[in-house]
Image 1 (cartoon, one colour):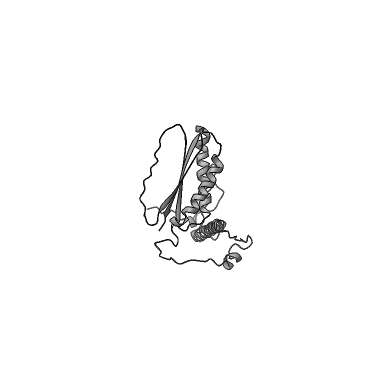
Image 2: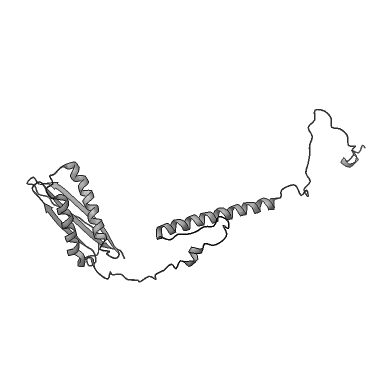
Length: 208
């Protein structure tokens, strides 16, 4: 029975030509990177990405609320000074199901706004299908902005404007919606000259 010599008993000599050299690094070699080191680097990178994302999110929220945040490039782990000084007021829920002032109380004011804007925009204006289409959109937007300035609390405003030609015809405009007749209401104003007519309606829907 022949016995193969072990690696320790082999004599070291020059490699044979044409055969590549094979090197193996032992498991306890300190130069070989360990899995623990790679996992720690990945953890640091993940924390850095999360911190940057948090700063970006806070900056976007600050832009909407009007606050400003200061970030430190030399010390990214340091908390911002402005965020600790800002006193954010948080209001508790009131559990109110009715507004303090109903939409019906503002109907005379809204009607006067509609009358002023419609007379200023449609005075001595002749009917044209193209210009009146864009004029109806512009007029509804102007009425919406002016009525919003009244600051109706928790009311959603919907403005609809119709412009048509006066040609001895009849017109009937109807609307249908599910609402609370005690809290929700609407205001309508009609204007007409020799060439056209305009009917504008502002709906006030209360948000519970």
